[in-house]
Length: 361
Ligand SMILES: [Fe+2]
Image (cartoon, rainbow, N blue to C red; front, top):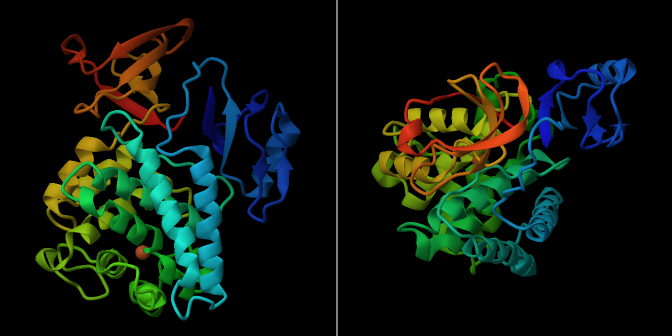
């Protein structure tokens, strides 16, 4: 199975499952390479923090992404083009005819989601080698729509998807070095970043076909129920419900993203964080709804059980997202057995077995 490994844990002899690029996009080591001590030194010098390796001791689990590769490739291309146009200043009069492309992306994601069986949402959307804003916009779009289509927001799933896709468009007015700055921002820098919802709204205001629902998502996605958000510091009842949902998804997706700061969270840790803000920064009911449907241990997650056994998640059942089906590949000492055994943690006989560790596979 392909799994993600932090550079600190990589040892000589492992086989690269994906090529390694440095931050300038230059190939450091090609796919399929069996790493030796020289490669490890080169990796350490390159500033790369994670690699993907083939681990033959872990069973292969089919990818479980919410949209097809074709939809993802089309979406990435259009969102990248959208940000490029915004950066070049060509959206001053609104989205114009480019709106058709952007709305087509949202419709294709909607179709892909509609063809899914079950209600469980797998939150991880891998977009390799792409600018953070592009990858983040896509993952917030997919996750917002996946949650919205199942509840009271279902009639507005297109509006929320378009709002999520456009939510950070105004970040294009923030200089790139500030957008990627790992250190805490100065008050002036924070003010500049805090203008991005209004700047985003300005870029789409002149597009009459974009609904008020979508526009309010862009404007209010950083408002917080506590009144601690921006740009207006609105309280819960004054924040439009669609924007409340995108606020939750935005924070959750940010924590899952591969960025220098903060460190990448597992879905389970990101969910803990979001739930801890429920009733304060986030709408309590919407957060609970979110936590019941989004898998904190998505298919492919490596799991350690309280018995000492290790396994990989192969299924997540509706209504019991915190108790997945785990394919065990070790014994209780953690040694690989060469045989697999599936354990459905949602069954009563496993109720005393706890998940004590999880990581991205
Ligand atoms: Fe934002």
